[in-house]
Length: 282
Image 1 (cartoon, rainbow, N blue to C red):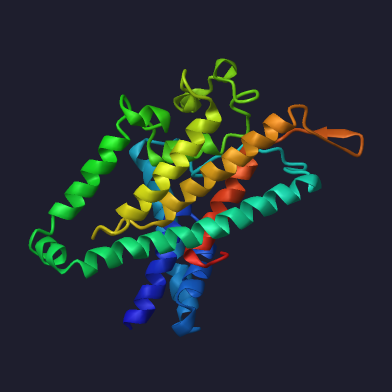
Image 2: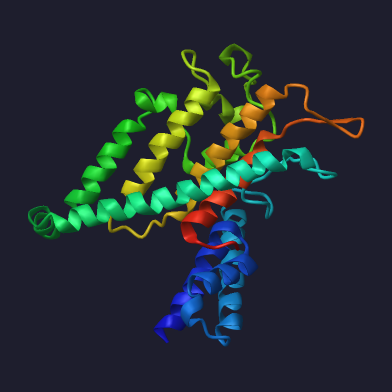
C-alpha cells in the first residue's frame, strides 16, 4: 500500500507542477518501475488529473488569472519551430546536459556523504536540526541578493519569472552587446552594464548549479526538479544566444530564412538536463 501511495504521489507532484496528468503518470512509472503495479495506472491518473485541475483552477478562483492558461507561455512559430540544420546544436545541448546531470547527481551525493562521514559535524547537526537549513539558506540568499552579486545572475527574479524569461523566443541581444539589449519585461533583469549577456548566463548556470546541489541536501521537501529544469533552460538559452550571434541573419534553407529561436534551445536544455538528473524521458 505504501508503494502504491508513493507512485500516486509522484504522479500528483508532476501533474501539479506542469498541469500534465499524463506526464505525471508516465513519470511515476519510470521512477518506480522496479515495483510498479499495473493496478496503479488508474489510481495515479485519477489523482494526477484531479490535482492538476484544481491546481490550475485555484488561480482563477483567487483572481490571479482570468482563465486557465499555460503555466509557462511560449510564442514559438507554429509552422516549423526549428530547422533540420539545427539538430547538431540540439545534439550538443543533449550531450552536455547528460554530462551535467551526472555531475549534478555526483555533487549532491558528495555533499551528503561528506556530512555523514564527519561524525562530529553530523552529531552536532542532528542535535541542532534547524542550523544546517538556516546556514544554507543564509549563504544562498546572500549570494543571490540583487544589489550584491545577484545583479550578475538576475537575482531579483523568482524561479518562475526566471523560467519565463529564459523561454522567451526573442533574442535578447545582438552579438551579446548590452547596449543593444531589447528591454522586454523581466528580461531586462539579465542585462548588466559591465558584462554582456553571455557572461551573465554563464555566472547564473555555475552558481545555480552548485547552490541547487547544496540546497537539495537540506531536510526540506522542496524537490530538485524545478531548479534543474531552470538550469537546463539557462544552458539551452546560452547555446541559443550563441547560435543567434553566429547566425544573426538566421539559417538559410530551401530558399527560406529561418531565424534562430533561443527559447527553443532553452526548452531543449530544460528537458535534457531534467531527464538526465531524474533518469527519465517522460
